[in-house]
Length: 291
Image (cartoon, rainbow, N blue to C red; front, side, top):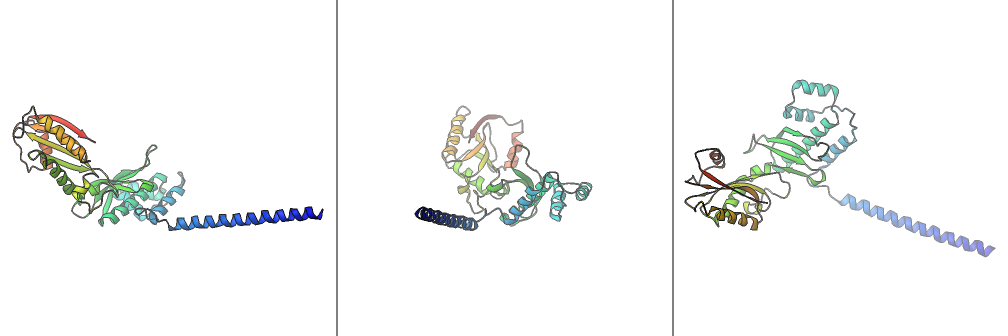
């Protein structure tokens, strides 16, 4: 009888000790995980202030109203709301959607100013609909060489931001690289390229035009005149240009046109677009798209 009791006691001690060791190991693992999480840096474009703003908006129920802040008021004024509309919002408070738009717009303005060291304002945009998870605004540059120009900015949550201002800054450099590539093989064709789209960290301000060729989306119009080739053969050159772009990893879409006559090789893209609407020119359109 005593031996049986002693054996049970020994077994209990073993179980209890094992449990203690398991808890210790579990606590150690949890401690390591906690330390590991603490060591992980947040997204470079998503500051602690951004996260706090998101948290406050997420915690607000859809039926709850909040008081408008000075920064939010500035956003709504630059967006174009009237004094009457803003005073009403001040009096009644902001609903979930209004606060969400204003707070995210402020985050995007902070992102732009940090990235480009310039000032911007909100002139348009919307919050996500039922099927969209992207916040976006239309921003306007207030200073710098592109003051007054507008572009779109997107907030993609944990994926960061994308903006179209980079295409304004790098337009000339990237387009010149595209012209150089095409004219290295087809010297006498005329190219009127354009750069568009929104980009994040994949494009850096320090990128050269050549480095950007595989990173951006180009639009282009290419003119082949009667002094270069015959109307019957210009399709062959058009196909070769499309193949050249594809082989060099250039993502682009545009039109190749044959012109019976001549055209100023130094014509600007803007003036060329006006020519496209001129009925006096005899165009033979040949659309070639590369993706």
